[in-house]
Image (tube, rainbow, N blue to C red; front, side, top):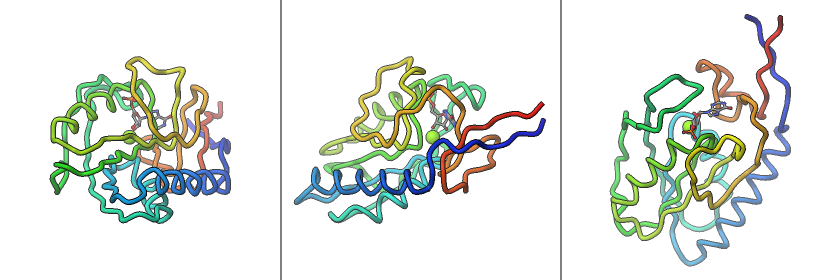
Amino acid sequence: MAEHIRVLLSEEEVDRRIQEIGEQISRDYAGKKVHLVCVLKGGSFFMCELAKRITVPVSLDFMSVSSYGSDTKSSGVVKIVKDLDESLKDKDVLVVEDIVDSGRTLSYLLEMLRDRGPASLRLCTLLDKPDRRVIDVNVDYTGFQIPDEFVVGYGLDYDQMYRNLPYIGVVEFDN
Ligand code: IMP
Ligand code: MG
């Protein structure tokens, strides 16, 4: 089936919002360091752009998780595919995600990371689909709240494609 992409948030809109969040984080963490934890692969584009706009000292680490279940519906049981390289003990940790959908992956992940003894643990997501929430997740920084539509770009994929789009688009199927 052929598909095309309708622009939902332009490159300029996304860049502008990331600049604002970067400034907000820089204010909130003034006098501290922030340790960014990127959830691969989706969070990677957002984290790189965000990190460039944070003015307090930044360190970063990556992890990869897979949720059991189909790609468009997560089960909430999360398997660590690649764990962090560094300890979180006593660090001010900010988890950077592409999107919070049902909230299952994040609520599980945050609980797991909290057990590792960070000084603080916050969550930053580029996109939030509040209508889809099944498990309550406390999101500290949100780029955009979006309607319940399947989106790609800026790290988000459809069947592993479109992650490289510099904007957020909705996948529409031609018939
Ligand atoms: P949750 O556990 O339902 O919150 O699942 C979140 C994960 O599902 C995200 O990290 C994405 O990998 C994936 N996901 C949810 N919605 C979308 C979407 O609209 N486009 C692409 N991936 C999505
Ligand atoms: Mg993700």
